[in-house]
Image (cartoon, rainbow, N blue to C red; front, side, top):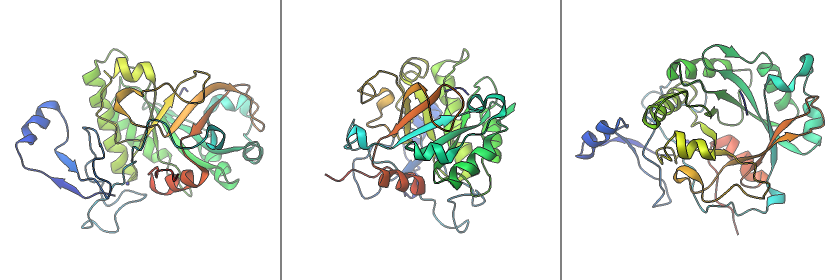
Length: 299
């Protein structure tokens, strides 16, 4: 692809200097209801009360961030029942052609991620129309940002947030698409990602999804487990009915899986479209769109 519900507490303990040395937040998330949930090493500080979506009713209300519950390394849902979706960018508008989301929905695609921005220099001219057309035809929609780690992470997050504030807003959480290291070390890259995730949350009030592919997460990002509290969208074109397991970076489960980049879709004139599976049922997908939490499947 080219381009949440917990009380936050500041802990003044002996761990603080250790975390500071590592460049990590001293904010500790306390797990809800389910005990023993791994949240990774990086946590989000409170979003400002002015964040535009899913924010606090007042500045004095405790920030509550729901966390996905890692139940298993493979969703407890048959492959055929996992909702299909697509992700698109300007490339899916050859010669300015519109995407017919009514036909896309009838073809069996329940959601779409639309590229909104890249770096600090690019805004997708089709984003607003695609976002409104998708939701107007019953297709769940989210926006994604293609990272350029050679420029400022916070500035990119601010631009991304500004662009995706379209009428009605996105129904799915925002996405960071991270695919290129551009010479950064794993430590530098992970710091960049932390900054982008925090600033996006500050601006939007929703916990972002991380999109990447296996070798990048394992090699360029050093297989870090810092981000396991964020939903994972993994790209893996292995021709099977599941991405390769175990997952990189300490994730216990995946939320979205991009399994192909060469699918023909009725309603889209471009020949090649990325296609994805959601790791749950349609009911769970709707709940995820509303809450950012993937609930456990009921057996």
